[in-house]
Image (cartoon, rainbow over all chains, first blue to last red; front, top):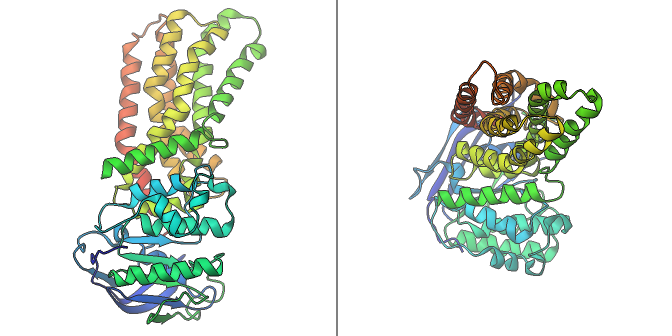
Length: 219
Length: 224
């Protein structure tokens, strides 16, 4: 899979994120090495999604610093990460393979490493049969599998996954766990927010408390 | 690498605009309805029709352009594509330009091609028919680029279309003024044809140079 060691470490020192004048995430520190995984846990509204979106560069940090080191460290962190969030990023009018081909060309670039063709990626998630169907006709779980196949079509060292196993069946969760293992064996990093177990072995755990945000501060 | 990603984006946008519900044909149909109803509303006064023809065509083109523009970034914001585009190594400013170019081809170009035919129904003179098409060709890029700023500012809002129109119409007014005067000047008048045309080209080039930066800044700050 991705054989890039473009990132050797990702270190957060006391980072926080504000939204609408309120501190949603405060004073988070972690230390992630190549091949490592970090799982963010917490109640609804604890700020898991907010933290992940800030690491991916969609939200500014209110304080602290996030340092990434490695071969590709001159590139900004967002260009080194794959983000799979609640929205699938798929156009329902296009077919699954057209969607993936687009993201493959759009997201390739900075990091080097092996990637697979859109059709092979669909085969890995067990959807090759439906490659030429418009995404509008796919079920929620199938859409999620197409979105996850994006991880395979462009090599990027950091995978940021916001509840990636939502709507997935047991077999697909197994495929996902194997893909995680391959990515980490190749020196990749994973940061995931989850409520369900993802099959990430030896993952560091980041416990987010909801007290800072309040139960209503969902991101 | 960057060229390949931009051409992929360009063809994706065109394919989505062409698909059912993509909104590519909506502006054109709106334009046809508005212009073809006008002679019925005004009555069979050919002199009046030919005098106000350029204005009708330009107002219809302006509204038809605004009609589809609010979805330019909102559709991507809704399905999560916009977040992913932010993680691409291609500069967001170029992504904005390419999306606008595809949008212009899918929505404004059909209007320009249809305008001489519709001008006939408004009893416009032959010289004026060419003039309206040329003035739309020179002016609609400015409308699309200015609209992109409004679309970027309202990308995170539900029903942001009206707000977008309010934001953009003051900026689009000079384009309308010089567009109509260009089309009118083609069939004679006190102003030579090339003067409003040069101003229209200038407005389009200025919008093309400035709007991508404004729209990209608005998109980056959308979530913050």
